[in-house]
Every structure is written in C-alpha cells, then in structure tokens.
Image (cartoon, rainbow, N blue to C red; front, side, top):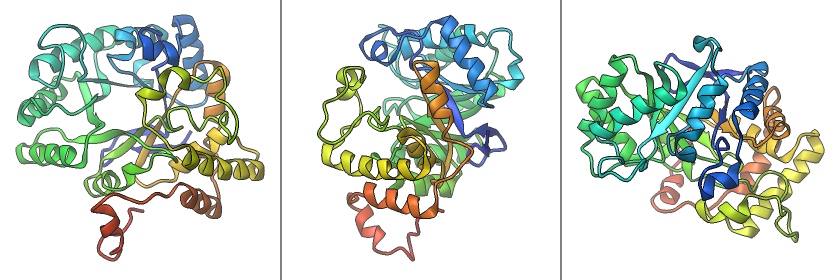
Length: 342
C-alpha cells in the first residue's frame, strides 16, 4: 500500500481508506448504502489490514451513530497505534437546539460521544462535516485547537467547504497560532471535477490534502451503467440518486465509453481505472473506498499497485472535461499566471 503525507503535515496515510457509510443501515439513505453488522465489519477490517489499508473513516450521522459504534467493535482488541481513525461532525445529531453546527458546545459533545462510540481515547483525523456560517470561526477554531492540545484529536480537517470558507479558516488559525486544517474531505471523481477549479489550487498553495469522498461518482462508475441499458435492479441509485450530485446522462456515457476502452486495454475494471485516475491527481492524499461486501472491497483494493499510462490519463481527462464557470474559465486563459497544480 502506498502512503502519502496528509497535506502539509508530517502525518502519513495510506492512499486508500475504508469508508463506513455502509455500516448500520439505519435511515432511508444509509439503509440503501448497506447494512453491515459487527461480524461483517470485522471481516472487512481484516481484509483491509491484510492489504495494508489501516485508515477507517466514519461520521456521527452515519446511521445515527451506529457506524461509529460498529467500527469501534470491529477494531476492538487491535493495536490502536496501528490504526488511523477519522470521523466527522457538524450536521444535526438530535433534536435539541444545540445539537448541530460547529459551536463549542456541539463540537465538545460530538467529539466526546464519538470517542465513546469508537472505543478510543483519541481520533487521528477529525473533520467538520460542513461549514457553519452561524458560529464565529474563532469559536470553532479555538475549540478544535483546545481539543488537539487535550490529546483528543491529532489532526484537523473539513469537508464540503467552499474556497473562501477554507481560506478564511486557515487565515484565522494562522493569525492566532491555532491548529490548521490539513485535510479537506471533498467530492471529486471523473464525472465530478469541480474540485479542480478553486479548491485544488488552494490546497496546493496552502498544503491541504484532499481526502476524496464518492470517488466513483455516487455509484455511477461501478461499471454497471451503460448507454442504452436500464439501471440495474441492484443499483443503490434507485434510492439515493436524489441525495447525490446530478450528472448529465450523455456526459456520463461519454466518460464510461473511454473507461470501457481502457478497461479492455489494461485488463482492469472500470472502478479500478476511475480510482487510479484520481490517485494521479494533484493534492490527493487519500481516497475513501466503500464496500457492502468482500467482493466489492477486494475490487476497489485493486486500484493500487499500478498506474494508467500518460496517454490513457489524457484520454480520460479529455472525455471528462467540462466548461468551467466564471471566473475559472477566464483564469484558465492565462495559464502563465494561473498554472494548473502539478
């Protein structure tokens, strides 16, 4: 398993982490993702560790805390220092007025609850699951810094931030000497390349590593979708399509056509090619893979240990290219002043 630095930190992480959104199966969205129980989770963790993948990602809202609890049970008895645990909080977790957001009150409670569910006394990477415009950034960042100093959190990240959200946060952290965000858990895929427009240049400049969620385009790049064919009955998109990023069908099939060509050339699967393409993108530190069963997990693990050729990457780049929104299309015309990160 290849390891990379997490942003501009000294912390090394595997290029793949295992996402636990399939653990628990509680609620409309997460039951469609999967319903992995403790016994199944232990087996999946074993497979990950055998492959050198020792990073596991969760969130308090995944199945209303059940995903964290199941992960905690699945890793029980294993050497803690050989595991990397990441989780997230910010979204509503309960009916109370203060059970949502990035306030001091909510973050302290959320971290303590996550530690209990995970069965550990520290979290390697803690991420805000989304931006909270209602809470002063100084309150959020000072609270997170205190939690780092208390030994409950090791590294900090965010998820689903816009460029100005992230840059303003980094500026305040620098002003007061507080712990910086070193990771941004962001949506990025061959059919969702908006991350490249502003967040990637920001990440390169500020040393923030991308931890990619939904690298297969919300399940559209699993190799099951083809032009002129009906959505398979087994596809989770029947239940989850409205929750995820929209994708134009013709654009999707244009990308899938090239993926199929390269699959025939390489002997690799469509998901493996889509994941390998991401691993060659600038600022990417880690990709979160998910699996409802052992077969899916082993398939995704096969994305590492080899590389697409430069020519194959170029073909995928061309097939998935889209017109950027303003001001990014304008900036792209002046590459000598706004170079693409490498």
